[in-house]
Structure formats: C-alpha cells, structure tokens
Length: 208
Image 1 (cartoon, rainbow, N blue to C red):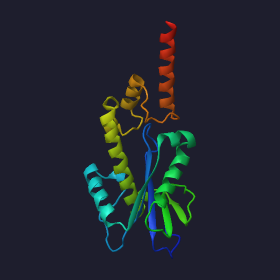
Image 2: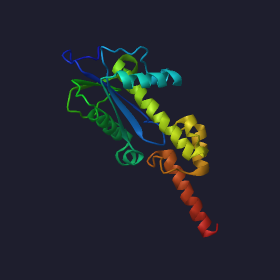
Image 3: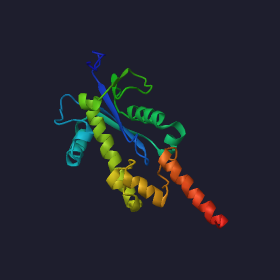
C-alpha cells in the first residue's frame, strides 16, 4: 500500500521510536522532515545499518534535513502511563518540537498518537519511507549514546553492551546488583528484582 494517502502533502515528517523494549532509560523518538533538494543516500532501518554507518547518517541528517526534533518519555513517565502511552507522548513531543509544521506525519508501526495534523501509521515504515528511516537513525543513535553514558555511571550492568534490553547478562546483573534509579519499575524483571531486594533486607532484619 502506498503510504502517501494525502497527495496534496508537500511537507512530510517521519516519526519513529527506539527503546520500547528495554528495562532502563527513556523511550526516545525523532521526527524528521527531509529536504528534497538535498537527498541523503543510504537511508534505511537503523537496526539494519552498522554502527559506523548510523553515526555518519546521523550527522548528515542533522545537517541536511529541513527540520528535525527529538522527543522522549522518561522512566517515571513510562511507569505512570505504561510504555505504549509513554511512546505516544514522546512522539507528540518530537512532532511539536519541529521548527516547521508538517502537512502529514508518517508514523512507524500500526498506530498514531493524537496530532494536530493528518497522520498515518506505516507498518515497517522504517524500511519503506525515507523520512521514517531518518527518524529511526536519529532516535537510535541518541538512545545508544545515552546507554553509553549510563554505562560509565553503572559499569557493572553492561549497558553499553545490551543497551538496556532484557538480555541474559542484563537480567543476571539486575539480580546481582538490584535496580538503578534509571530502571523502569513497572517492568516485570525490574519489579521482581526490587521485591527480591526487599525480601533480603527484611530477612536480614529479622535475623533469619
């Protein structure tokens, strides 16, 4: 299906998110309006690109795009709203942050946040729509860098390696060290780790 259901749209923004699945950190979104006069070669789903290629495209997108913006929802908001609603909020923030108002917003996935302009969800849009591909690259590079910074603060968790996703290593370290202030407490593995820590404290206090 052709995603461009509004043929009159001349200023199209693509939106994508990174970080719905991890146990730690914000969910990060990006919105990008590309410049037809300054094409960017090699745009693709960020997950299918090498880290080096993503970094290069990240810099090129920020220079060549007509407008770009990042949005986010923090772990506390994720815990309060749930991950789906927090992701929709982060997408709204990304679109609101654009310096130009788009005629149409194309969202990766199967649902759209409430926006003040026409929007359409595009399944696998990060592989099909250049604007969404660009947004996925900005969001992923941004969040990966944040995980690198978190790794410096909490090296025992291996955040730079697993990027906060619930890998065997992350779950092991979560059990060993408990949750950081940046973990999402509403996610089951984190909630269980907190309960285990409380039980250990209570057991130690009772002398059993």
